[in-house]
Length: 159
Image (cartoon, rainbow, N blue to C red; front, side, top):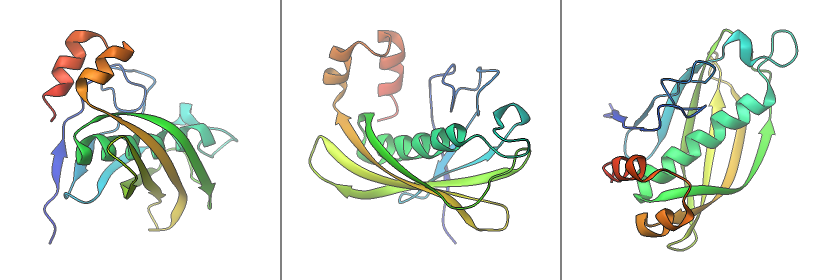
């Protein structure tokens, strides 16, 4: 039996993981030290065609899962550089999905390939992605001026 533990996320307004974003996915993460995962309910307002999840929502789930895997496992801030997605099966609104993310390959101290997948309630892989991520030490990330200083300081507590 694997030991899963909750992983702290901090940007409360983030579309994917922000708990205070009323339109967002409100993703929460846990890890076993090798895999990052999240169970996410696809809401009605995240639809594409009639009963299907919008492909952009699925892309967001895949990206966010890879992102938090990279942040957590490398103990660095990240930015997605590129992403390739395969949509394999329909994903329906008002259903929960499980997303898993993991390290595929560390290319250098500043670059990594990550992978993620979305699994439906029938345990079928519905979508998968590979992403190339830039990895940043806190002082380099500060120079980019993407995240306000107080939030960045709070986020450094994750490491």
